[in-house]
Image (cartoon, rainbow, N blue to C red; front, side, top):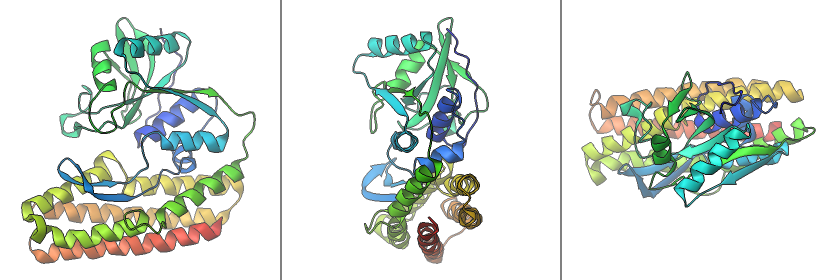
Length: 331
């Protein structure tokens, strides 16, 4: 059972799965357009929640929201199914493949055998596509990988039913109805407005206010929890920002590409201008990650290094606040 499916590599798993599933259904959506229409740019600081023994920082909305928002704004319908029975989960997946329907799956990263060991940790919000079965093995298109791969039934079942936060519960999803026509201007404006609302939210832990809260916390970490743990917190922040969530510079570059594509699509040159500013902000996020890495790798020492990182992140929050105010006016 092999579906005629073309694999496209992407920067982020959920964007990539959404784009790949829709392209293969005949609706050409780039990864940046999928990300932008799904209002994927986000920031939230949850100091009371620990991930890998560090305060939780997320640069994206909850798993599934990007594709769900994208679907709502384009007028397409997506079917999602979760399972309590493992045998039933495999049976339904095989049935969909037999019907010629590639399926998106939410899985845990830790036991994916094709992932490099340094990228394996207990994170259950990864997305991939299963598009066929050859012999006993499932054919897998993981959008963050360069080429397709395979998983045995046991390997696939293990990652589909990973335990812990955001346990996937065997979840599969796939488009069931595509729109006859799309009002791109309405979809793009709604998506941008949502992102601006999120990033300018009046909530202390969300958006630019959340960034400022983290900036203030960085200075306190060495005295509050000790230098080794403070450095672990920084390492986890960079890991989520650049290596796993791609939420720092990576998401800013993707969003800049969305603004450029959206500006051309609806004839709004202001969006094209703002895409260049967002690219520059993405560069600064990468600089922040490098500077934080120097600290936790002990290439820079002293109390002043945490103050410098705090000021750098505070400056990023100020720049993003001004950016999203301008973006809101542009639409």
